[in-house]
Length: 166
Image (cartoon, rainbow, N blue to C red; front, side, top):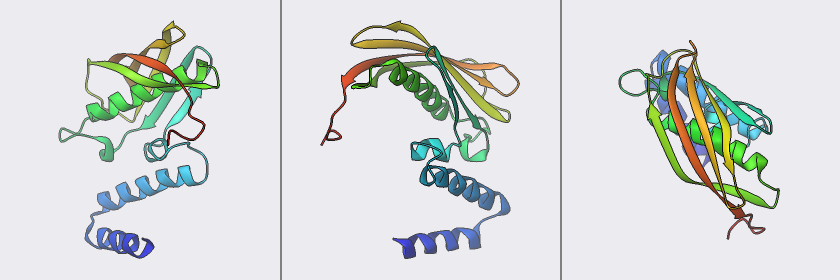
């Protein structure tokens, strides 16, 4: 695997533009954050997520760059949805008893402005906390403070599997 990966990276470096190399560096730096324990998941590392969490809200911020944009140069809507779902899910898991976890049941996202600027900030809050389901709201803002999306998510509460679900 290491040899194959080295060949892929070497080919990319040889054929890539300066912008391509910046994106590769950004991605590898982010993935390294998972390896060194700064982030819990590869996705958090790849997106360079920063998180603030308390019992009432969760805020996740990511820097924006061309790796994350669509063909129009705006933040890809699927990534906006992913960050909103993550902010809402992290909060839902945080307020759920330790022997339980949550999984997304439904996610509704309303896009209201283009995702541009230097960073994206998503904030989530609890709307309803039941024994078997939670409803969380989320908002996404670009670096100039303009709201770009509003979301709601419902999350099933599930008992954690000791064996990892296998």
